[in-house]
Amino acid sequence: MNIGIIGAGQIGSALAVRLTSLGHQVYIANSRGPETLTDVAQKTGATAVTAQQAAQRGTDLLVVTIPLEKIPALPKDLFAGVPADVPIIDTSNYYPLLRDGHIPELETGDLTESGWVQQHLGRPVVKVFNNILAAHLEHNGKPAGTPGRIALPVASDDAAAKQKVLQLVEELGFDALDGGTMRESWRQQPGGPIYCNDLPADQVQQHLARLGTARTPEQHAEFLANQAQQEQAMQAQGIKLK
Ligand SMILES: NC(=O)c1ccc[n+]([C@@H]2O[C@H](COP(=O)([O-])OP(=O)(O)OC[C@H]3O[C@@H](n4cnc5c(N)ncnc54)[C@H](OP(=O)(O)O)[C@@H]3O)[C@@H](O)[C@H]2O)c1
Image (cartoon, rainbow, N blue to C red):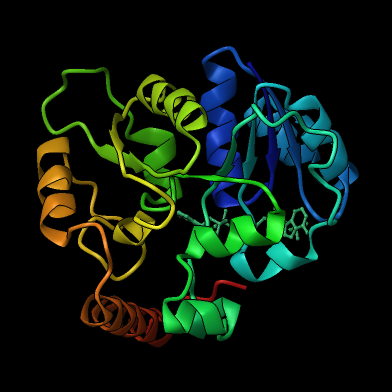
């Protein structure tokens, strides 16, 4: 496939390494221009391009993997010429304390995190790879059937795009699970039981079933509180996200 990745940080680079090793043609972009991506291109085997070029050349699949707070800074017409059947993956997570500041719709729970992203992009997105650490994404994929294989949920309102991405997740070495609609994608967000815990399929399925589909105010408050605690712990360890 021809795959465009917008964002050349931890997740963008990890994905690029894996995708090129599987034989895909990968175009990768950051905010500062391809001339600043020589090392990334060398390490990953991807071709460094501008964000506009990544959007045009990723004719089979696009990935947006930049900090959530930067999403509104993307050019409004970035995906204007992209055919509707090209899936756009979003890997975002909301870190209000360490990076993103407070975003009202995410605090109230009126929108899910990727729901907020797709509203800004003006295109449906597919939420995946948000709940696995970049290093694990790069190194911990395993052949199908391996005991303990990590399972990753895929959520989207676009059934065809979701199907294509489910196949890719398997190809990358993870059990791919249907995570439901964009409205239901809160279940894989930070603060929840399937966030960055590297769980196998049966356990992820159990959590998804137990959580239900419609988020209650209590569940929203619990996830936010868990994430706040996690961010405070990271801050205490001196971890910076920007
Ligand atoms: N790190 C993880 O383990 C992990 C795991 C799961 C999900 N995530 C989520 O995935 C997203 C990306 O995380 P990350 O850790 O990969 O971020 P990161 O390492 O901080 O990298 C961010 C990348 O986005 C680029 N970028 C920023 N604004 C841009 C713009 N307007 N146009 C094009 N590129 C732009 C940056 O380019 P410049 O350097 O040129 O600004 C940089 O290459 C975040 O929402 C994060 O929460 C991260």
